[in-house]
Length: 115
Image (cartoon, rainbow, N blue to C red; front, side):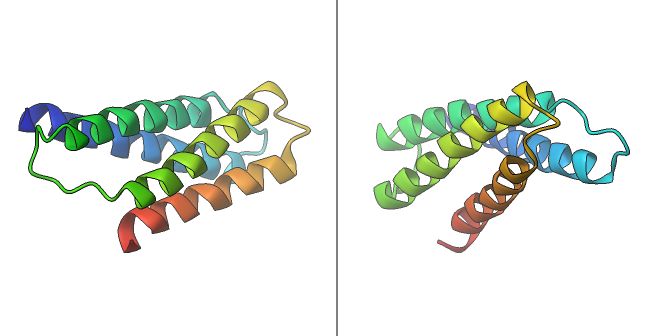
């Protein structure tokens, strides 16, 4: 089960990379993209996060689960997913939402690294 867990970790990190890439693309592009990259990354983050937590909570891998940290990360990830959906649906009118998405993504990365 360790290999499945490791594959899910890679997919989880790729989801984060998609969100960050979408933010960078939107900041540097003359014409803002529609946000599908960020939406895909946010969805991947939530789905793989659920799977990683389930595997670790079931005791199938040798990892401890900090339920408070998981709850905070899940809450932020769901908010990022909702914001990514808003940016995808209204790419031109969601400038403040976009910056909130970018900031909360950085918060979620910080929680993952420093907590």
